[in-house]
Image: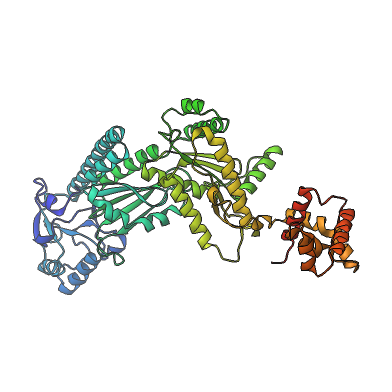
Length: 554
């Protein structure tokens, strides 16, 4: 601990005598400073033991001493040392009375004790305290490292909580609590989710202090909690919380900084290792899609647990922003320029989906395979697991937050589109991938954020025709018939619609139109002549019907 006035009084070589403030000797001394100025306050920082001989003071004037001591106490001076036998044979009573009134400790310094000896004593005590703190910090670092190697992040948190005499918690990228030590700190840590999320919005490294005895927002939690972001990327992937009853000391600060470094190493792989992992993920996915699940299992080993043996769901996601970034990067690479800077989250909304899926899988202890595939993201996750549920929930939240008038086709660059396959196994991974792609295409056409393959056939096929290319084809197919009708020489478009809706039944269709069946037969021959195609061909009838539906008014 740092030196105090009490430790200086008990120093046998200094021979100091307490003349006032006997009940405040346990206050720490930051430094010993000599000043004979009538007003040394402008040069004080607080925490000093001020040493004087009253060379320029009228120490016998009660009013002057009252003003002098009051200013010293207000500036945070922790004690006053008065040398006797220099300018005054004894400590003036006016000074003693003023010190007692302000509660400022007053020490009598004998003639044979030079101020330099007091300054050396304070300096030596501060140095010894710093040495103890550094030594304790190194010991804490060794213990934290040992526990991390033996028990992982959970062991580190337990050791850190013991070092700071408080509690510690680890959060994932979403702000959810991953682990705490001791266990009873879980509820306290959960209250800080919003604070962790705010910290994550700041560039790393970032830290903040919440709570404390003066906390009016959460008075039930008087802990002083320090939050620290973890990781080296622009957006931190996790955070550490350390809760204590008071501010951290030097040794505790060393322990916290060591914990931050160790947790960063354990929670964020090096760039080269991360890139190697991505290459393995992509290779395993390619093998699965090529119908080689046995080779995929051999390459994967134990990386994905039982993911490649249990039923899984294939997820394919994309966003216009990702497509634009990929196109820009390809263009600049082709031109020989450096790839565009995308910051710490190059996938944008896809990156947010990755964090949601991986965080949910980590909390549930599930394995998940995540592969960026150009402008898309491909995810392999356990059927019925937390990762799939988190993906669907995330997509539903995005869709609920989107204005009703806004559609994905409207050009929102950050829109997310997700397609989920039906449950599948490794042998049918290629089919599952096609299902996810189909669901993705349906989601895009329907203006949805997420569509599962089981729901692809639900509802009408007509919303799938709401595409500019389909409408252009329909207009082109029907244009000649509409031009004919515009001359007033017959109603061929309406006749085709009635005839197709009655499945080619002449009498029923003619009755709907209010014409004779021979008139209808004549019109259908004219349709064949104008289009140059036979209505006996089912493909022609299908194309005409879809063209009519695609161009029908809403």
